[in-house]
Length: 255
Ligand code: PXP
Image 1: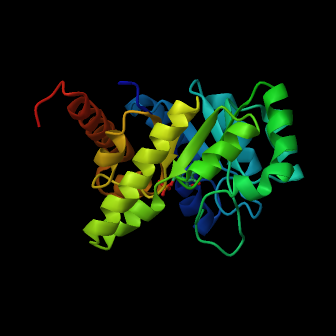
Image 2: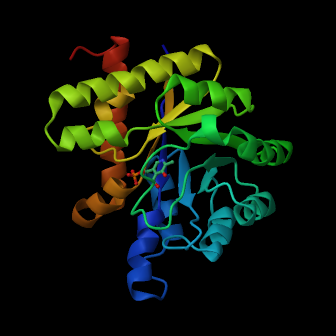
Image 3: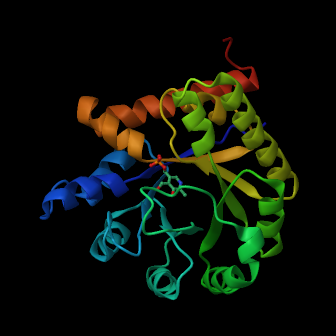
């Protein structure tokens, strides 16, 4: 059983709040530094085509200020590829993007977009950027991701989290099982497994307990929770819930 479980903190929504007024406050770079201080293993930022949260300048400043690895989430477009190759973050996570969506609503259809994606994966890999695909927890998406040579996938946990919020226990259990099965299958075919989207204090435990998952990426809930108790305490609590769930699943802590 893998005990490693990294936490990537997504700072997009610090920028969303800043952008509501313009100016420089609150600064996502300051939040990233606070996240590092609180125990984040990496920082995540999604540079969208419409720049609705982090900006190009934020990306430059994050790259300069951070000692932690940065994961850049981006759509598979030529503009984003140029930016990624210029900055060379540690990881690029390729996500689907639609202007009208409020957040990344589903996983990337790697199986259908195979031909389009190969060129992005090749160019980034040649520049020694780790490439991950943000996918639905489905074997065919894992197979397709592997076939184009990406070393990692991030499994979309949104449907599971929504089912928990809706109080639909049967659906939540089914969605969680889909994630667990995909994680097992992905690890079996040699992929590194990440997961994220919509995770909260209430939903993180069962996902963290899935032993094949080595990284969780969490943003909106942590930034929202920071309003009430500060970003550092939100991250520390999230970390400890993750670690506890992982330790319990490994049998090293009695529940
Ligand atoms: N992972 C990916 C690929 C995402 O696109 C997002 C949302 O930007 C997240 C994780 C984090 O989701 P949330 O903000 O709901 O925690």
